[in-house]
Image (tube, rainbow, N blue to C red):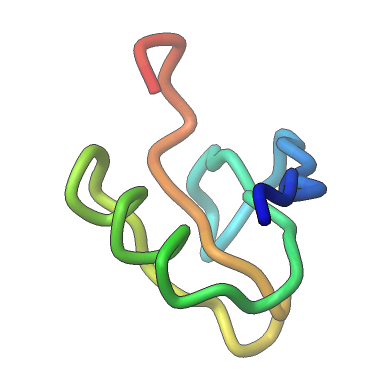
Length: 57
């Protein structure tokens, strides 16, 4: 069965830095693929993954 992930990308601010927030339901496979492609970190306070707020991201 092939399922689609509901993923939202939002601009945000974390500790004074511009970031992109990636919001989606927990899925280890998606997390592993994203972390292999881009530098992501988990924000416990925002409850989502985030990466640098650059246009290239």
